[in-house]
Length: 177
Image (cartoon, rainbow, N blue to C red; front, side, top):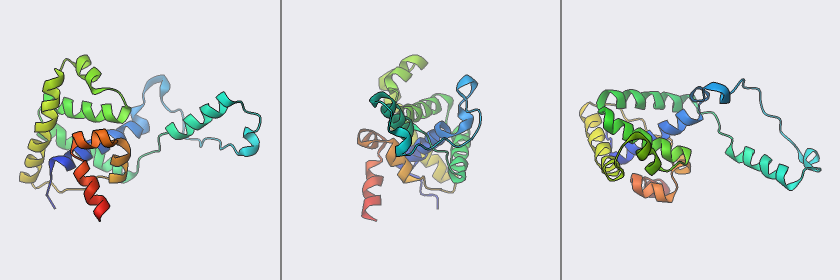
C-alpha cells in the first residue's frame, strides 16, 4: 500500500521523534542511563511516612517516566529518518524534525525557530507545504506505507497540535472504526 498523505507523514514524523526521544541511545553524557536495572516499586507500607513533597516527587517520576519503544517503533523511526534524509532537502527537513521534537519535548516551536535562525512564519508555511510534497514523493517512489502507532501519536499531540498537524481527520477516522 502506498497511499501516503501529509497527515500520515506528519504522524510518522511525530512517532519517530517520540521514539527517538524515548530511546536510551538519545540520551548522551552525564544524564545517560547507566544501566537498565528495574526501578524499585514502592507499596503503600513504604509510603506511609512520606511527606507531601516526597509523594509529589514519586507521582511525577511515575508519570514522567518514558517507556522504552518497541522494536517495530524503532524500525519505523529508522525508516523515517532514512526517507527524510533521501527525499527532503536539508532546510525543510530541519524544520519538520524540529517541529516534531518540539511537540514531543513540550518546548515551544517559536523558541526552536529563533535558536536555529528560521523565521517563524516561514517555518509554519514549510510545515504546511513540505509534508504534502514529501507524501507525493513517497507515493511516486512506491514506498510501502507502514502506519504509525496512532495511540502514541494521540498521546503526544494534544488537540491543539492535532489540528495543526492535520491529525484530527485521523482521530475521527479511528474513532469511527
